[in-house]
Length: 262
Image (cartoon, rainbow, N blue to C red):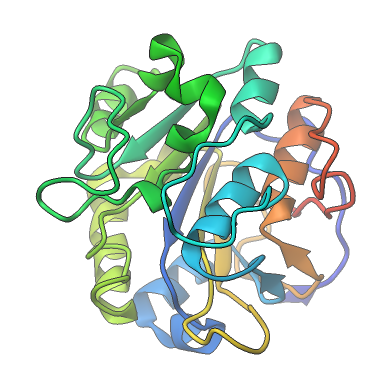
């Protein structure tokens, strides 16, 4: 089933989990059986674009409505308003689940085991999170997710970064697809979160269209098996959260971005 109309997602979901994978063209991702299966269980967005290259600008864009001058994967700290600020102003919660996270507001480039990379954790690069121990404590090791599910303590917006192997960066889309299958089976996140969004930060090709796989499933996703061909981008994540929870906006590309339908 295919449709192209887009309506506001306003007040239709209570929480969202975003899982971000790495460096894969749309055609390669949708050909993977596990990623195709996830899309079939919910809604596939067949015309979703990333923002730039390399990886880090996309992570910053998704969470702050702009690349904010970030053009590389180098360690950066930026003092800009972000999605965490919007959520907290409304009394809503967020948490960043990072595989192989060293903990203690770690600001290094990578973990000693070489599996966690700061460039894939945008929240640690925002001054108002990095330099606030209470807020920084919301960046946790990914193992905390199962505990939070068991305790019924899910954040309004949850971000999940697999490690550098599981996200396909140092492996391939087949590896990432197999990881996703196992992750979904072991956590049952689509039975706990209203919206589970799986996307890729950017294409493998560094030139040409930045067209990436993005799909959603979860308790609030009603158009199961649908394909949406409306033009969407990574900024649509912010636009959807803002519309759904009445967050206002960051005054950047989130203002003109199109929310995605459920």
